[in-house]
Image (cartoon, rainbow, N blue to C red; front, top):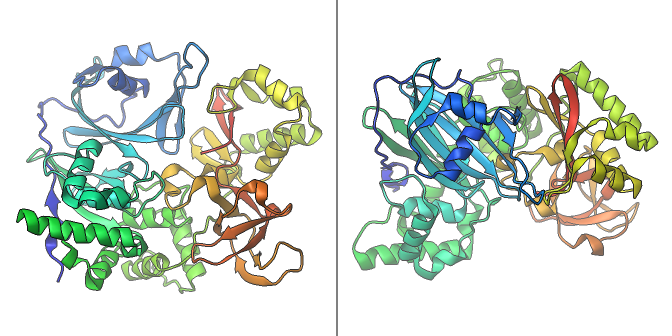
Length: 532
């Protein structure tokens, strides 16, 4: 029998509440204002009018639901990355989800809770509390939202290590990586060092609710997407260590090894398979490759409906007239969790904006004709060409004159574009998957099949025997690219099958991507980046 402690225990954060707070959702806040919290840790108050003015020379844009800005390069011209936020308000409190990239591959989350005071004439953030979390799957923020009672909630992503850290964590804080790691080592001993904590190794989420009456965050539950990792030998040893350690210290560990049996795993899976909450359904659809361009906002709309129907079709489940029916959604999610393959379904949202379509036609023409100046005119003067600081029209001309980028640009521009903000697009779609939707895909080795009915072949040769059919699968390339046959990649499917695929039938998950933003009414290519 599984104790209720598997799912419910408390995390307490004490905050003070002034009586003159208002909502932040309609208030313009430059994302640079939150960068001040990096420079001045512990800052409790920000004058927004002064801060907005100080950062007004740096343009902002909406990207993947975040109001975002790109930091100025340092004195040596090195890219310092970007910072973005989204906000929600409930009652006196405003909640901000920050996503910070400092110029490398990491995307670190922070949670800020504060109150807006002073009215329109002198808006301020007061009683600021910031909680630094982690990088993507390892305690990064999966989403923020409100529940049916209009209470603020937040979900952190969990790796296998994060799962255990949550179970043994202190009851008076949100996830704190150094502190949690210490407690985990104390609880599990050497077994803790074997648990995976990589930023792309997601296995579930922990959901917290903020209670304004008690001024506390309460851990509501843990949701699991996959149970395979619990069967690994390292995990088994960690569970045994947790159980033995709790007996040695004569204290309770939240999930003892004796409770980790098939009935508990079934209970964990069943808990995740209850998408009566539209937000939870959207999250699963996004993770499964059906809804990754949509927002996890709890609102039933055409994108959610289309994603659900696509999932139903792939899983062979007939749809009732009421597509949002709880049983129908549960059936699809339960079947999908047990599926053995990742898929990333094609997306092309260029048609949402006719001016953008025209811009793309001009870009394709310039690349097709290899007209250097025609293409350069379509880019921002500070166009970013790499994470290491390369960029600007000078570098771009030099690269194109050397024959670099043309093939990559041609491939990218001939695939679908994703609308990632009100005035922002990213393409091609396989390389534009956001970090929190690629959690189960190893970026450096993932190859996205962009054709339906592609073949997994038994040998690297035209006419080789077909092992199985691939429909937009995400496959793992299992040998260095330099050692691959000239026209094929050797790959492994999620279910363990191995074979060969044609290089022309897919695109790398961390392949070159273009970020195109409308600035002063004109579309411009702001970056051409390759890598995670």
